[in-house]
Image (cartoon, rainbow, N blue to C red; front, side):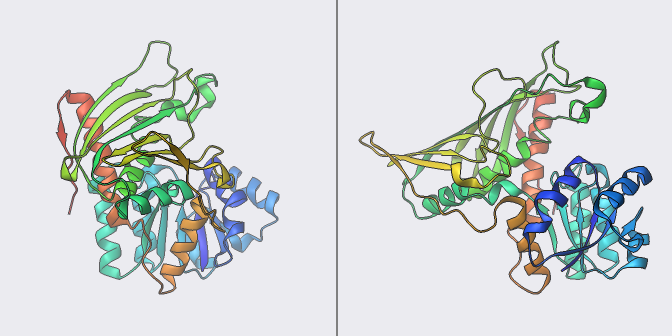
Length: 344
């Protein structure tokens, strides 16, 4: 796949360093960055020809031939860029969060489906051995009927200078920017959809975040399963892995899941422990894949664009994760239990 990469901020540059070189099916043929100084610096650092550098997708497509785009621009630009790429006949892989709202995301989803093009969202936490093994165990009925799920996420992120830390200015930095990972994993691992949400957020006066960085959420899933989620960017407690610490309980035991201890490092430290009815705990073997995280998702994208199976996280699928997070934000504002409304 000939790929145009749009967005060379910190996370976009991380894709360039740690993800794109690992996927042999992908050739990055051009980069797009509207900030001319940032584009020039990237061009010098990577010794790129002028034809491989552009300040807009329109310019890039005049200079190179492409099959798809990777969008790592700010979230407000995701849907406009996706629509522009789709209208140019290109497949689209977009970073999470997909869009500011599920309704806005639907416009890109509908257009991709009309045009018969791949629109995929990078929900990279799905592509680690712990969550995938947990999903397979639940599908096989090893725990029997489920009685509950508890997810904890704890990090301390309150020391950086406010003026130079965009994270502090993100809207809903916990629910929208981080919990989207955990809510999407909840759907993936359990195979159930979130139907109703009750969320409470908090923002201590000493927080450097402009909006609430702490939340407690109850999520009711199909079949009456209830999940609890506690997340915080202001925790001095023992840090969890990035995918959180999970307890999944059922009639025949409990699964204890931990994933992404080292971010995008090789996932050998994922863990999945089965606690049986007698209290005995067994660490389950996990298969470490050749590609994981964002690289595994990118490989799915390239193969789907080439006519292979559709990716796991289509834009259509991701609407349900976005809508669940939106319901959590609404609930935190209204104080009410909010229904999850997935746009169709």
